Image (cartoon, rainbow, N blue to C red; front, side):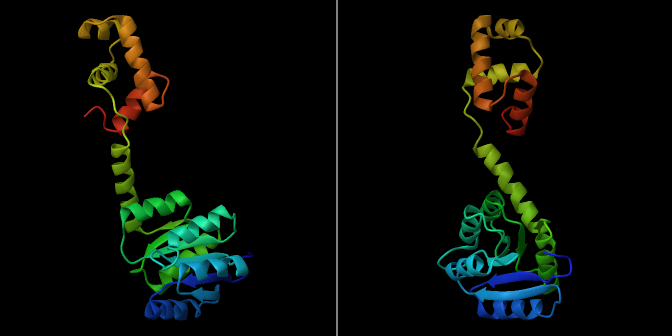
Length: 214
């Protein structure tokens, strides 16, 4: 897309009033060309495949296929269309899934037509747009998943990990726990495997990030 060419755009939303309002706002812009619109995800995906727009603006909760399901199909088929998700309700899990799937923009429906239009232009040029609320939701979900996905360490492994974090050597840990140094090495290796690391500093860093030392 050249800088002087309007951004070809497909819009999909199943709320007629919102859809008409958005289409009306976008059609007043010289830098955006709406080439198609739909009221369900299946039709939106077909439009994307047929028209190959630069950007698709998709409601999160489209019928037949959700906005994220359309996004997933676009990525799976390696289509060049970039995707902006609009959401009436901000669910942390939905924001996380959209970002993980490769969304280019995520805004709430509280955004005005100018903000949505600017987001379309921005992502068409290769940028990424996340509403502040979406960024906050993503942060909450990432923290929650990091905690939920924390590896299960045995009580003894947690003791060894805490002592490693305190800077104790293998012999010092063995003496403190009254176990052999070979046993300490075995526990340490298992901790490394569970944390996906290969040395002490990385183990401590991952443990702190995943709140395993609390």
